[in-house]
Amino acid sequence: MEKKRQQIQSRYDARFEKDVWSVFKVMGEFVDGYERMSHVGPSVSFFGSARLKSDNPYYQMAVQTAKELSQIGFGIITGGGPGIMEAGNRGANEGGGTSVGLCISLPMEEDGNYYIEKEYRINFNYFFARKVMFVKYAQGFVVLPGGLGTLDEFFEALTLIQTRKIHRFPIVMMGKEYWDGLISWMKNTMVASGTIDAEDLDLFHITDDPEEARDIIYNFYQENKLRPNF
Image 1 (tube, rainbow, N blue to C red):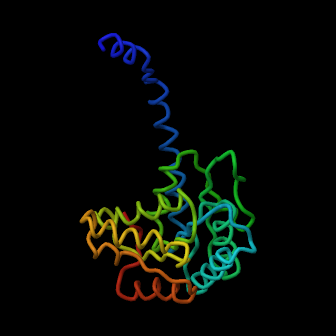
Image 2 (tube, rainbow, N blue to C red; image 1 turned 60 degrees about the horizontal axis):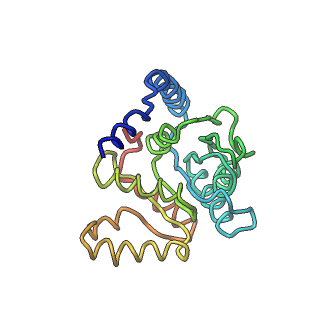
Image 3 (cartoon, helix red, strand yellow; image 1 turned 120 degrees about the vertical axis):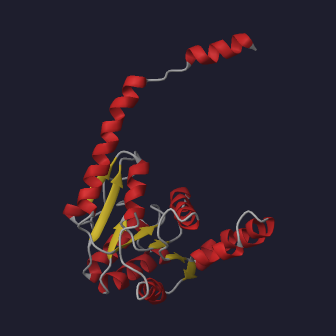
């Protein structure tokens, strides 16, 4: 066992110098993101699969919802990629709203979709820096059918609100049929096991109606301040 312990310790590469210099790259992404996002104004972040095409009903749902929100004064923030992200930016264009793309370098995706405004196409190398921008400058989340990244953003927002690390803001899940199994599991397993409270399920709304999604977010801010989250 001692020999194995020494072997593991000797093979560990701490990469101290590389890690120290990477701090400056991280700082650069935060500075650029903060500076550019501070001019966007009240916005809603959209999440969903990059794999869904323009003929998919959820794509169309995203376009219409983003359009409805843009028409009442909200900008739209997406991850800048294809699929639901493209749909959100497209809806922002159609509704006359600000269209923001927080793009990240990935081997399987393009640098950004056609519908992002040039001045609001912001590139990131680090997921965590990008995720801060999604939360800090959003006054709401719209979560459409997606994969692991979509779930990551959804649960992180719930966690931050539940723990009061950020101000509460409306989270709207769209695609009732798609999310039904997840919500049922949260109710029947998580709540039943006592790992979350039943009240935690009130931190988000579920609808398939773009106008209802718009109204949920609009009505929330009739009684709450519009502001960055931290």
